[in-house]
Length: 193
Image (tube, rainbow, N blue to C red; front, side):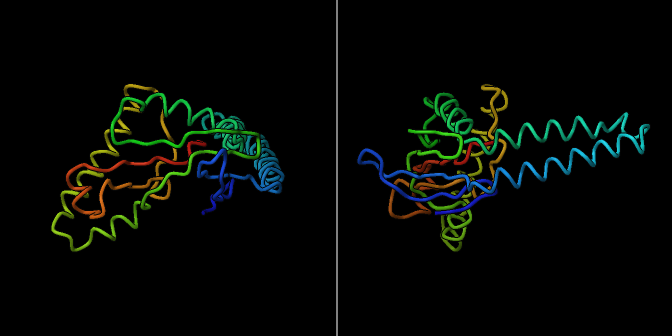
């Protein structure tokens, strides 16, 4: 189905349901670990070579923080927990859908398969439609509302909300008309960050 920095996504079936299966390639952890070791060595060198600059930039602290975040982002268990939290936070929010995690291990995640058009594909489908402007506004409003809810209500932000992690699932065959009247779900994928 797709591939990201850390994992590949495949289609599958689990207990009779269509699912997305995210698998972290075994070599990914080793490569990330090696890269982080190099960054840590460079940070320590910078700390020693330019202590006055390092005092303000804290390269060792920055690399430590980055290393922790990379470790979490390559754990499918962490992603499953993040999906559960987002699903709970958006359970009363009509028009926003988050995949449901079923099984998670450090290197694998099985979650509900979510249908929808990738955001860029949806925007291309809207080109030339009389409802295009209203549909684009509806998508932007739904996305902004979701982001603001995460920031100001939930204090839990999906930190990777780019167009590749957003699907538009219209509630009708006519994409432009459905989206323009608000009859769609904004599907938010990949909660690993």
